[in-house]
Length: 505
Image (cartoon, rainbow, N blue to C red; front, side):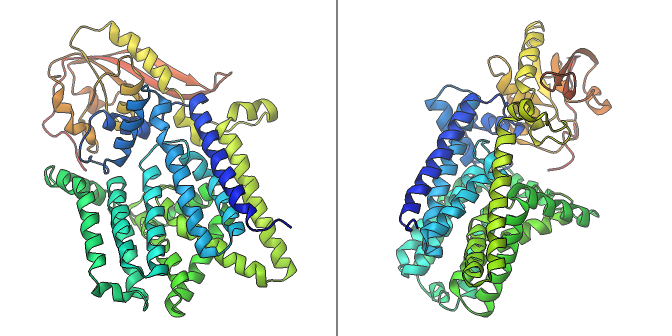
């Protein structure tokens, strides 16, 4: 039987393999940037203390890689595999300490890399890449504090929370989770009467200050935007079921169930039985999942929103189910082994299908219909950029390029020749970061190339004296005439900015 020490090497090789595979993938993939990636790239070429939607960390990260490398989809995405590998290293060390087993930590890291959301998150650069990394660092530093009881751990803990706040405003919740753990733990409440936590808080606030300064000088629009996403909706139960289905889909069904069950056990043993290990795992995971679930009241959640809750949630699943395996019957052990095997197989199949759909189709004849294909949004932007560039070259000097959607704005800016500044039309839509840049473009009365994913609407058409469809750009499934999506290019004349530019934050 292999001794536990070999699993340290296996884990290192696993992290290295996935890192190299992801770098190779983003260097060779036919997938275009998704809208959010292009949007964040546009942030990166407008450096600032913060932005309308989120803190600046994702923009700073993209700016770093697109400075040391040529601007391309590869350099925009390079932060994703880097952050994912760093997160895996931190999580592995944390799991080793909590699980007291490199073998169990290795199996957790393997699952950590193979869930569908990890497959996507390792190659797509959004603010979740740094968010998850700094949440892992926060959990690691807090655990060192719990184990050593040395106050100086509050300083790197405060720094990780501050850097996390620059990544995602969910770090308000993550900071509250740390406080919740201290409140519920009889052994840790003493820190409220020590100076170190408050110095750590000052460190967090100092590092996170760019976000506060930007919001103070921009009418607190980030907070208004976040509140705007939390309005009450009558579709709570439908959204909640979609949320549960989404979590089971992106984390694989059995792993999601294992996490939920394990957190229930950890909550009981941590709060009722006063066990700090279980309480730690519960407090740094369950509140995030519960909070995101409650956002279903607003009628919308996304499957990736609670991703940081699965750091200690996933460790909790291994911790609780490993105990059941050690003390269980032969049937239970067989069930747990089968569940782990099923989860890994689903993850591998998802990895292959997501990464190389054309090769899978050639071998099996299986292809997801465009409406069901989660990768459908990764097609067409490069083709659109080429077609739009040709049309725009033939328009009069002084014309501008415009869309009405922030994501499409970013894609057009990235894929069109010379990366033009693209104006987002204020036609009653939700506000975006482009509304802070639109004033830089002198567009009143000028002609425009308007690009949209559907025929132009009356509200948009009313902003111009005249509009003319010049080209439709269909995007077909490779090797067929099955339509994936379609773009519409309009030559518009005499733009006039409306008085009421947008309806909501």
